[in-house]
Image (cartoon, rainbow, N blue to C red; front, top):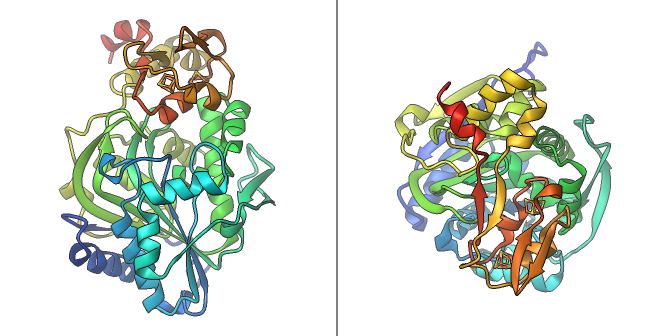
Length: 391
Ligand code: SF4
Ligand code: SF4
């Protein structure tokens, strides 16, 4: 955003304490956040608002892997009170993008309850349209689900989580859920290198943000620590954040969970000049910092180990040293979900158990994200143990 002299204005990031998911806590918190980032009725009145939650896959809300319905409901009610013509909840979770699969995600993620209570609609339009990329570095076009394309306003209500591939999932990564269903796997296959994948996610985020006005709200009341985005543990952080700029919001949140400098999409955004100056309002991030937040197994000290070795031997080493998935044979039930979700087609079933052929693995961790039994573990390269002595 520019001021009247054409100079870039800092992006405002607002943080507010929110102790629990009761409507009495959440509703005034969301209202205050909208006021503080200057999101008013003028922008909503008579408009078709689309809320994009994070429903990643069918997960109970207690697991903290999905956006809590209380926040989606508060946003929907507020939009109606501001005069929205319609409010639609739309998401393309991992796996197939079919009426039955999104219906199941809405039900388990309690979006069906939100719709019933607030008057919001659930999206079942399975169409998608190709639009030119506005980042234009990695991808020339993106195929984006139609409700996002046709929205007058998009409210990106994401979840603060660790992520074994990108380090953290927040506002920027949540936009990957506008790509229809299994096309997300094709994108992983197209960009097997983490830097390229992160650049593509940054392009996608910029593209969605230029289709219509976007407001980002992050659910950090109960975040996910450890092996996110689906196999971590709930961790209370007790706040909700909002910003019109997804890159600014993620940068602030990465600091709160002690992951600043370790989130690949944030680092890529900085490299490419996408991260604006930040103006903080509300509670200071320093008051919310969680020093004992558990990082994903793929990050941890391993990150600094990789950095040291890649400085010693060159950046290409980074890719070969990245942690890889291994199957816990005790936990695996042989359902084959990982095999179906593997973009590199490098998982085979043997004796009713999954097995990863490591040669072709691109280390995207889609298998871990989709495994319903937490049977996909992260194996670090032993060289990193050596590298830690130098960090
Ligand atoms: S998804 Fe998990 S439980 Fe199912 S086959 Fe793969 S590793 Fe085993
Ligand atoms: S085995 Fe897992 S990490 Fe490797 S390419 Fe397949 S889905 Fe990605």
